[in-house]
Image 1 (cartoon, rainbow, N blue to C red):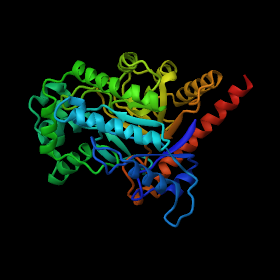
Image 2 (image 1 turned 135 degrees about the horizontal axis):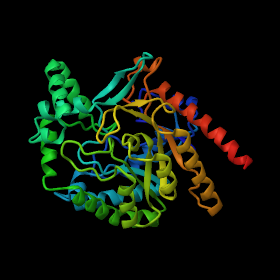
Image 3 (image 1 turned 90 degrees about the horizontal axis):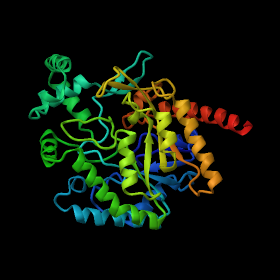
Image 4 (image 1 turned 90 degrees about the vertical axis):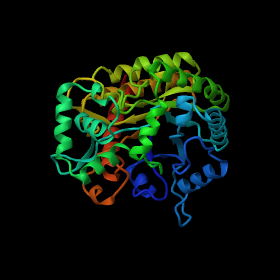
Length: 403
């Protein structure tokens, strides 16, 4: 697999030099300053390519921008309201500009309002480091008692309601603000963050939109953009819901293999593919990740390799970001399935035989604690994860070579 590194631009506290030293071969990034629905203009794309290729002193980084994460889909497109058709035209223009720049893999998601959601961005671990965590009771405390969403209590079981009330009562004003800020942080690297009032307004846009309607809106979107991507030689890959279950009364439609199968079959072109995020999908105990990686393999265009540990075998549940090889997902089996898919592609002569992957997220360890990097994207925690994954790939690759 092609070993990539997510980078958030010149202000990222983790530099491109760090990425090279960690062993990355290429960069995953985006135009984080451009709002959803706007055009990614060629000049902006080229400027980011130069920032990736060259250090400020003009020396070469020996890295290139190879994967977009993410080209965001606007809320207008997701709900098919307002100027959504204009946003769709802008999305197509952005794809054309990315194709001209030679960037072929584009990750996106179709999560309504909130993107990946955590209640704690620096949860203390026994070894002295920290990890990101989603705590269902804390989320319920926010939903019911901070956001005060109408009928929110109906979405939680009695034990969660009781714990949520206890947690909320124990929070001071600073704690309430911190919880709200963690949950409404938005897309990693983006300049946009929801206020409570703004979040409530966004939720209101989804009144009357159930899972079936949202899924159809996704299929409508893909029916427009995938044929263009196919002609341009691009690979679109949808990131799963994170976490993979409904939040704030909003539907989620990319949480299971069955969800992906519906969408892949509805727009059945090779350009319509999967971002296989082991951490997101692993937050559901009913997702068999090695089997999913094998069955969805031909349409996996990008892989996020990370691991989580669930507090309970229920949907929904609480979980935290574990070490890459230490969570409940059999990461060795997942990597084996992806390497087998690469081997199959090589035999077919596919140009995209090598699947780009990145060590997703990471625990903050050692000097990460003082660097102040983007939550979930520390330098040393990801370096450790990439080193472990590289070791797994080396051993499995050697074993396959002897077969």
